[in-house]
Image (cartoon, rainbow, N blue to C red; front, side, top):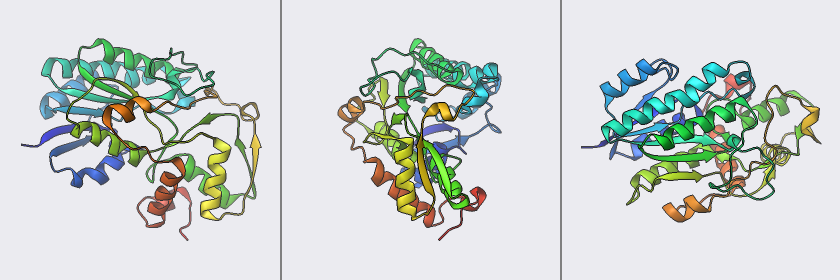
Length: 299
């Protein structure tokens, strides 16, 4: 009998990629839920759905991710990113189920100068990061069998993200200013989905916190330049500092994650960021997304 996975955030970037991959993993029965089926701000609804579905493994890809809006919606953000995780973790502990939870580089303050390890001290600088760290702590304290994957700069053919926003803006404008003093590495959501399936198929479920992003080190400006080059767009890109683009929530200036632990533990290959970007753009060109929704004309 296939093991049952319950995947939250079914319409998000990662959840959508899981839907694409589901047919390739017949050893798992996948149940996808979003706000309509299981509102993460409602503990009672979470419990009811879990009791009804009784999954063997939860993949918590759902989250409150509106980083700037979170500054004025801390209660809701905390309910989804922290309290909901505690409810799911408690259910997993009680029912001998496992949980894979997606977290973020925003649990750090962004002041490091070397790639961030799982053991480095956390120090979030905005509400979103704070609630995500509290969710991690709730999971660690629950007694449930868990894997936490911190990731950064996620993009996909699905949903709203930096790559699709850049494509739209470069098609609309002659010049753009892009932040160049924030450093990290992007994460193609499809690559992350494959890694999670590798973890589920591994001989042993090794509990703990892991870091995952594509390999390499770039700024947002360099990311935009690569998008421009691959798409052969004419927009002029100017490198700017973060202080020229103020936002309600502070962003970490350094988000580069050390991914050696997940590579060594689960024996995975991590693609170079440019290769994954190229693959994602090819999926877009093949019509595997909602390009028109974002005002991007297919070539």
